[in-house]
Image 1: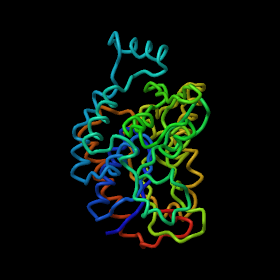
Image 2: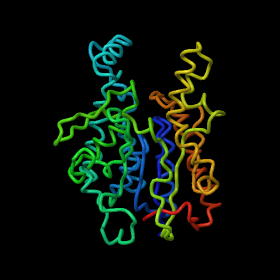
Image 3: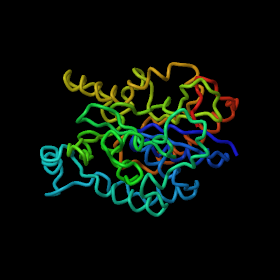
Length: 330
C-alpha cells in the first residue's frame, strides 16, 4: 500500500475540493502516516488522521450544514448583529455550530484529544525530531498575542500545555478562525496565566509544504504530497475572494491585497522550486469563494470533479521517487 504524508492548504468553502482529493487518493490505495493542515485543510486532515476511510469522510461532510456556519448572534439582524459581534468579540460570527459539529464527528471517530492521534514510537525510530512531533496530525494556527505560528500539538509546550490532553476539535476550530469573520479563540498558559488570542493559521502559513521535510540529510521513506486550493499571485489575486474581484476604492483595494497576500504570499516562495511543484496536487477552485457558504450544488459537483481529475493526473505523472529536497522525516 503506497504511503505519503499530506499537507493540506486552507481555503474555506474551496476545501470541498480537498475532501474530494483526499478521498480520491484513498481510492488509489494511499495511506497517510502524517497530515498537516490549515483551516479547512486541518478539518479534512483530522478526519483522515482519525482513521476515517473515504466513505466515512464523505459521510461526515454530508452532515455539515454550510448554511449554519455563519451563525449570526443577537439580535439576529443582518449587519447589526455582525457589527455588534465585531465590536464586542472581534469576530462577526461565533462559529458555535462549527465547534459542535467538530466535537461530535471527531469524537465519534475516537479522536477527542491529540493523545488519541499519537503514532507508534517504533514508526518514528529514525525521525530527526523529538517526541513532541510524534503525532498523526499537525494543525496550523496563528497566535496574534505573541505574533507567531503554532504547529499543534508540536508547540503546545510553548504554553506549558500537555499536548496529549488537548482537544483535536478545539485545535481545528482555532485554525478555522478567519480573522474578523469568526471570533478568535483563546489558549491560556496554566503557568503564567497569560491568554493568547488564536486565529486562522493562514495568516502566517496557509500551505506549509515543507513541514515534514528532513533536515538531517537522510533518505526519505515516503514523499509528502501537497494539496493546493488557492491560485498563484498576482494572476489569481481576484479569485481568492471572487465577490471582491472588481477594483475597490484605493484604501480598500490595498487592504484586500494585504489580506490575500497574507493567505497566499507567505508560502509562495516555496512553490517556485521545481521539487516542490513536483509534489503538489493543484485543484482549480475558481468561481467558488472562501466564504461562499451558499455554494450551489452545481459548483460543489464541479469542485469535486476537478479535484478527482487533478489527483488522477498527478498520480499518472508521479514517478514514485521522492527527491531528497522533497523528502519527509517520516
